[in-house]
Image 1 (cartoon, one colour):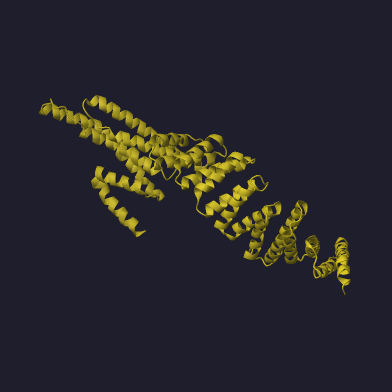
Image 2: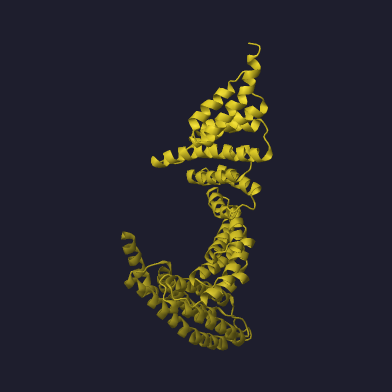
Amino acid sequence: MHRAGPKTREALPVQLAAADKLLQQSRFAEAIAAAEHADQWQPPANRQQQLSIAIILAHSHFSLKQYPQAEAAYTRALGYQPDDKLRKDALRQLQLSIYRQAEIILAQRESEDAAPSEEALNHLLRIRDSGRTEVAATAQYDAINFLIQLGQWQRASTELADFRQFYPAHTLTPTLAAKAIVIFEALEMPAAAASELLQLAATDPDREVRRQSLFMAAENLQKAGEYNRAIESYRNYSKLWPEPAEQRLEAQFQLVEIYAQTKKPTKRNYWLQQLAQNSLQSPRGRYLAAYSQSELAEQSYAKFAELALRLPLKTSLANKKRAMQTTVADYRKVLEFGIAEFTPQANYRLAEVYRQLSRDLMDSQRPKNLNELELEQYEILLEEQAYPFEEKSIELHEANIQRTVEGIYDDWVKRSFHSLGELLPARYKKEEKTLEWSDALH
């Protein structure tokens, strides 16, 4: 028995060589049995021999698709601190063993038409804990996709940020921007989404992606309340992307909206003028033109209404008439578009322009140095000038209320009825009440 020990120790390399040969011959089950037998050797194998046993077991289990056992054996092999090349190979195989476990679970879930499971996700995500490699990057990327699929937005955001930190030059990294946008929008982080979109708008090789990204970035910045950056993005879009024309008009319309919110009327008017002058004949293009022209006409009307008739009347009346001409021209442009939403308003305002001028004439300052007779004659002259404007106002209001025949009875038509009730109370106050009673039945 004393001599048996050395013989047994000398036989272990032979046993390991046999196990390795079985592995090379793809006789994996036999290789596992031989390696396990060597693993039970007495006296025990030394450190290098233990490493060889672990590698034979790991490769054999992996080849037999016994991935949990392969993972355990590769982990054991790495514990023996092999040389750099062997360590690199063992680490890759260890990570692939975990990746294959995830794949099996995912394939089963897919056959059952079920969402990825937490178990599969955990396999994918724990790969990175063993080392940042190409396999780990692929696994983490897959995990990000599955987290998005599951709507686990915060986890997806965390993993995405981690991936970018550790793999900035990876070929998959540029594709993360689109995923980040989805994640940030789901997390209601529009400013973060906008930053991703602006990056795409500046760098993506696809022209259409750049265009859409810039517009979406502006939308998200507007939603985030970052109006200066939103304005810059919409303005850049309007400048860089003339086509499709309708989308460009939408960018200009949003500039109108933002400048209204931020109380910058001069800049708002610039974009209103751009929209009003657009030549796009699509329904949306004509609507935006009519809307913008109506907004500009309202400003002209406000300026006209504010002008008081003061002495000397000749001068102030000339100014008032010039303002009236501008206002009338602006509202006639609105009518040219033929958009039902703005037509009653334009007709009402046109009628009120003439009514306002008639009223202002009658309310204008009188010269103080007139005697009673001269004052009476002056009043008659004012009435003679005011009367045609009042008649014109009545004519236009009556034309506006005719729209009720077309089934239109909006606020502006109601206002025309009200004005006619004041101008011709005997004729229209009764009709207005009857119409309001009839309208109430509906």
